[in-house]
Image: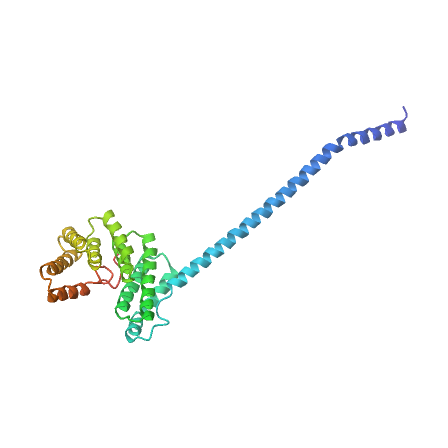
Length: 281
């Protein structure tokens, strides 16, 4: 066989082999192309997921900023035209500004959170006593809401019976007696040996006209604070005397005396109102 014939036969054989392999090659190329498309789709999906996560984080950040802005409603602006309220705002201005700055730098600092909660509670309670118009009452409510917000932030990081009592008292000062009583009843159930919860439950029951429940709570306050460490024993005893005077002396004079005592103790027993520093962690 001549060389030319061999070349022709060789070329023909190569062409035939390629023809037979074409479907397989096509499949391989198609598979690679599909694989590339799938990879591109996965990358695109991943990019979309990343964008969504970034958006969620941004939205979360916006919510956090809103929450922080709400907490920064410090009561120094838009003070009602009331000399007592303006004086209270002036008294609290420097302290609130310093604490707010510390809070912005470290939102999880326990001492700062408790100081802010205590400051707003004291301020809100005092403002409530000086408020008569709807505008003034709304202003004092805003201060107390701030206190509750900071107590909540504090309690998320540190469990504290004293803070729970003070938070419940804020609810009471905000004229939300039912929720305040519910909060204290739960605390009393979980911590039956804590004197302050019984002292304040007694006060709230008394304010609601439930004298029997109030008397029982005051007795528990006395029982759980035998050395008067919390002041619950003396507080409970004084309220028991007032309640007994209502029963034994139904005269107008007796009622007037009991009502006067009741108003004097309306603030309840709280670590906040007796401790302006609020550093009792």
